[in-house]
Amino acid sequence: TQTVRVDGVVVDLQPTQFRLLATLVAHAGRALTVDELIESTLRGTHRDGSVNIRFQIHTLRRRLGDVGALIETLDHGYGIA
Image (cartoon, rainbow, N blue to C red):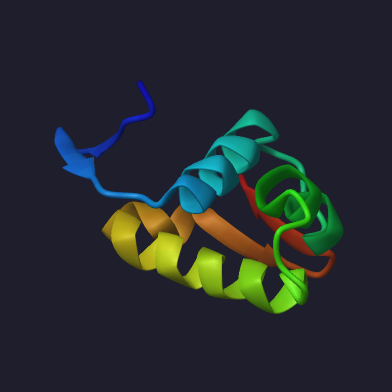
């Protein structure tokens, strides 16, 4: 199943947010550009993916609570250290 838990509590994520988190985790330690995140998460479904990715990152961080701080904004994109 596509379930995310933080401290044992299930976090409700939208499918796009789940794909975004899964992509970041799969590439931990590497910065992913906005274009790479658009390709892997939005799948061409949104016109202005760069704005949408930024919104999704913001929402994902908020939903993950303190753990969301692990998602870093980097010069060339986003990543998880």
